[in-house]
Amino acid sequence: MAAVLLFGPGPASLLGFLVYGGNYLAARKGLFETLFNSGQLALSLAVSGSAYIAVAGGEWVKSQPLHFLGFAAAAVTYFVVNSLLVATIVSLAEHHTFASTWLTLIQAPTPAIMVLGAPLALLYRYEPWSILLVIVPYLFVYFSFKARATNLELDRRVGELERISWASENLGATLNRQDAVQVIHRILADMFSFDRMEIWLERNGIRELIRHDDKVAFVSDISLFWKVLADQRAPFIVHDIRKYPFPGLALKQGSLLLFPLLMESRPWGTILVYTDQANRYTAEARKAASALAGPFSACLKNAELYEAIRRVGGELTQVNSRIQIAQHQTHQASKAAAFGQLAAGVAHEVNNPLVAVLANLQLLQMTTGIPARDTLTKLIEQADSCRGVVERLLRYSRKSLDSPLPADLALLTREVSGLLSHPLRALGIELSCEVGSFPAFPCVENALSQALTYAVLAAKEILLSRLPEAASIKVKGQGGSKELCLEVVHNGDCQGLHGNLDPVCSRLSLCEGLIKGQGGEFFSSFAPGEPLVRITFTVGEGAVPNGQKNTGD
View (cartoon, rainbow, N blue to C red):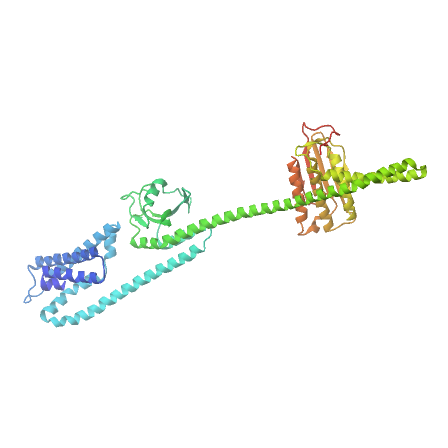
């Protein structure tokens, strides 16, 4: 303003253009920014000088006093023209209303600095060196104000960095996706003012909405929305939805701040922050969104990966458990097969000399007298009993036919009980068999024999854990026209097992598999008074009269 009074509009405009342009170039500002700011300053000075001439009736002459009304007109004109030009360009660039931009750009020291132009011009006219008395305090005030403004800006940026640091810490602590959404909502609520938030993610070509509330989604057509999002690599703002309709939105008014979520430079999701007030978000909001978009994307992707890992881990645990059960069953089955082969070998080795002993005893019985014949008869009976045991071992160890054949369940139960009664009696356990008459029904005999054996051995393990007096195992059976039932009962205490359940459970598991493989139903219980194992078979039309049993093995 002092230059306008001293030199007139033309020289003042040129001087302002050169000085302002030099300062901007020294600060390494952009070319277009430098040209605009220097040009608008020169234009403001020229118009304000013309206002002084119009009001004062001519330029200020040294011999004449300063025309203060003209100076006031020049100062007001400069302020209005300068602020109008700057506010217009900024509001157009940032899509804000002119009024809000103009109020934001007004700085309190500006009118006061312009008023200083009058005393500077007066001092310069009467004694050029005297302006130093004003310039020095002016520079002191100016740089103090600049320092204060810089400190305020630094405080603001430090606050933003602290919020971003806090946000990063909270984002890093989230595990599942819903927690990540809640943390993102809290962070945005602390930094921005908004009414609603939505998060859209794309996974395997499917676009999914993660809701923060139960309101209807304000993205009505995600396919249209995604076409626009695919071209975005940075946060952007829709200042007024009425003026700039956004494809796929169900909103009619308000403003929108969008955070693209990028993974390997490709958008895989977006965060939408909406408020029903237009022109709510500024360039500062876009900068903050740029700083937060990366951590938000990483947080949501990590939460997604965590959930996938937890899901796969659960599946692997189940698979591993099934593999361990299968390995245990295979081990038990191989042990049973080895036992069968051993029993067959032993039975064959014992059977050959036993046949010779029986033959010689029968010859002796035919040639000796009556007193010795009674003794020989007893010996033959005992040898026949041994031969029966050998035959049962052979029948047990022999591989059955794969196809079921009619079998006598009562006879099969007695044979298994006969095989196991002697070794159990040596352990102090009495095994008894209480079965009646059963109708024959189609089954694989060897599979049922093994199942009964596993059930009895499971009861044996329970009794051995805390052997009671008169320990006993009973195999009970009853049959009807429609159902056959077998039960294995013991008089032991299951609480004596404590943590040693593995032998019992493994045998019961093998028994269950064999029974269900034959179409039967399996029930097991450790409760007092309940049978350890209950096996039932439904007798269909294929049941045959008792006595026609499977002899094909």
